[in-house]
Length: 385
Image 1 (tube, rainbow, N blue to C red):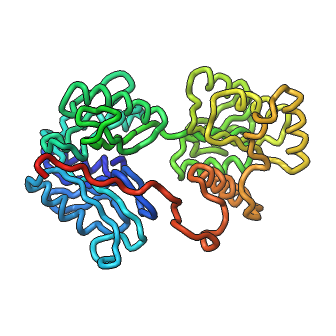
Image 2 (cartoon, rainbow, N blue to C red):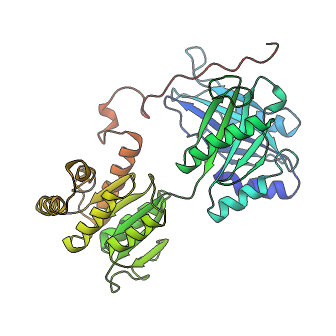
Image 3 (cartoon, rainbow, N blue to C red):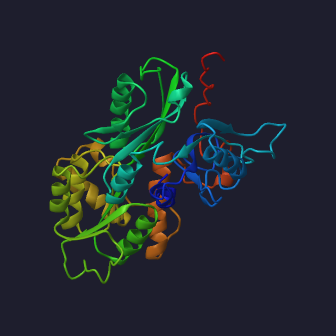
């Protein structure tokens, strides 16, 4: 929903009803991730995408019907031998799309969600996408770290789903929960899509060199909040790093220690150490390895530099398991030479570890391009069905 939020809020503030289709679950080689959305206005204007073109026409029709008064509902799109080129995904994937009418009446809390997203405050939206009681489908619960707005239809469901949603929000995760009709963990009868709008994950680059500039630009493109830190003020200047979110002049280990103490380092944080100087990189590596678990720790340098760095870390008291978390030399073997090419190799390594990719050529592997996932669940049987 983030990509269509501006258009959605313009219609919402004008008092209009729109049709919103949201990808809530995917299987196999689906082209979009959960949370991807397509918005249709009363005038027929379309914003966003749920499949990159495969099923947009069908979702457009459902969204238009929702504007006209059709109830919210869940629709599954996939392929079979009989209809591979009909309304489905020719890529071989399966995706569930929830289509709902959105207006001031159906989602009065939306203004506060938009304000949180714009301000970078963590917020999650829990939406009932299936329920044994059809009247509850489409209900929303806005979940913040310390409060909730709206309701899923019962106090028990609100309390239980809010607890789980906060856990997902803390990790920036978006997923569908299967619960009992009132949120019971061991039950069935309700499915709730929890869409987390967490602050952007952080990329912290230590060392204000030309490679850092290239990596910072690419990190911003990939959606990270980018910080560049160097103790040398002559190198860490806005003129050299005009596009970063935070430019810090400080000793790397001191800055990272302060960020850890303030709770601003989490499991989504990426730390790249490009300083090439043991008086900088060894202390900051020690701080990173002794701090909370992060998504990635990488250090640039030659094989000789790597060996010397590992020796210094052992002398500093780091264990074998701690040191093993460092990716050094940093990046994938792409044969990179320029700062820009090296940035691509580092970013590719981060992406491959995040999603479990091998780093090899796609043409050399079999099976789904996007990896394997669990099979889709059967729809919830409705009362009287």
